[in-house]
Image (cartoon, rainbow, N blue to C red; front, side, top):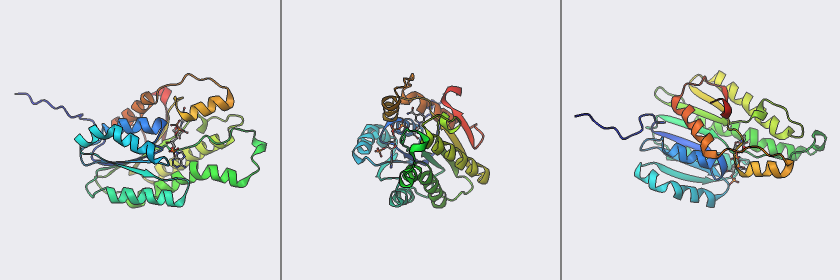
Length: 256
Ligand SMILES: NC(=O)c1ccc[n+]([C@@H]2O[C@H](COP(=O)([O-])OP(=O)(O)OC[C@H]3O[C@@H](n4cnc5c(N)ncnc54)[C@H](OP(=O)(O)O)[C@@H]3O)[C@@H](O)[C@H]2O)c1
């Protein structure tokens, strides 16, 4: 008799997946997608400042994750602080057993920052504060995770950088956002060059219906056609499941 397999044959394996900025928008939609592709014994770490939104998401995922024996942990921290990054790495280390076969870190948390003319940025602290969350924190978190989970045979290591078209394209008055995204792209390119055992993807998710987009429209008056976060999250999941992209590549929502 033919055996019937109900399990999704393409999975992310038994892994630990860390999603920063999971409380809202794209990160939240991605948490739903990821939870359906992890094997039993996996750990999903949801990271953002808002504890209540993270707990709400955990509840949304619960019926499925409990059945599939996936542990979901909320880490309510400010990733622009040393303590917040440190706690995220510590929780990941505590939660992941030795038998994980995939570490998937999704650097999604980010902020729009001020949209204002170049000459207005005279306050060093304000500029540094933007770069701390949007550039430095992603570097320090990724480095911390690489130390916590050293590469070894049999361990798949993937890092996703949430990017933007503005990593490649300069836009007047968007100096903070463009600079942050361009710096991240280069930062993760360096990781891809340096670490052949780590698969790195910069993903530009397209214009999505999120709080960040609401701010953009309010501040600039621009009107874009917005896509649901789920649509973009599903495209990213397909890229990760296919795992055919060259490490370090920059992929845009519109081209996949
Ligand atoms: N929306 C778009 O159209 C679009 C287009 C291109 C690229 N992107 C990129 O996609 C990513 C997600 O964007 P989004 O639109 O989903 O943004 P969003 O709706 O503003 O959500 C941002 C997420 O980051 C978290 N976050 C912000 N500051 C944080 C901090 N200091 N510490 C920890 N977490 C923090 C927020 O949670 P808390 O507030 O709870 O901390 C939230 O979960 C960003 O990197 C963005 O640049 C978005």
